Amino acid sequence: MGRYFIHLAYHGGSYNGWQRQPGLPTVQQALEDALSMLLRQEVSVVGCGRTDTGVHASDFYAHFDCLGEVDTEAVAFKLNSVLPAGIAVFGIVAVHSNAHARFDAIARTYQYHVSRSRLPFRQGQYCRLYYTPDIAAMNEAAKLLTTYEDFTSFAKLHTQVKTNICHLSQAEWTEEDDGWVFTIRSNRFLRNMVRSVVGTLLEVGRGRLTLEGLKAIVERRDRSAAGVSMPACGLFLTRVEYPDDEWTIAGNNKDSER
Image (cartoon, rainbow, N blue to C red; front, side):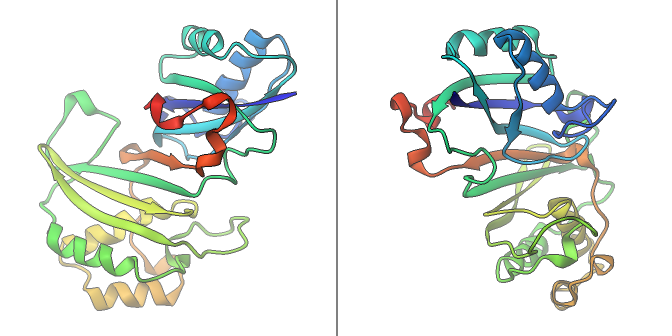
């Protein structure tokens, strides 16, 4: 039994998230069905995360086990022929038998895109604003967030997690030609965390929330205290990082596939 990692990307607009759900289109379901057909055996895949309905991923990994040796280049090519147009496979690599796409990830990076402009060629990939936010104030607030570890105030309620502790290593806004991008990197994220963080930072950008107010929200550890959850369409999972030894099988190198 061999284990393989798949490197892929997907546009989340057509899917009810990553995780398989009865009667609903999901990325996991599409990938499992395609692999099972091509490999002529039932295949289950484990993703590096569970993106919500409408959330995109430009860098995503999943692993699967398979009886017999897999011609990775041929299967990757065929997957791109049979998968829906919103999913693209960049490559498949053999990994050691206990490698895990989700639990072995050491960091993830998300980006959230906003713009004041109407962007017809980016529909479903950003959130439109009807005001100009104060980016300097939002960056000051984002820097403040990196000094905290407990993000209960930004987590969806009633989820099955053992801890709400996250270690942020990056949180910043940058300007693009047609809008702004929020980039956040952490060892782990809570469900709905990035979208509620963005919604809260935008309150700072509109002058409705001060730094002291943000501190109070974080320290209150109550989801109802934070800002609204932003629409899923603007959110992208853009990078998933693994230890170097995850890619030593047969000389595989993740960076070479980028």
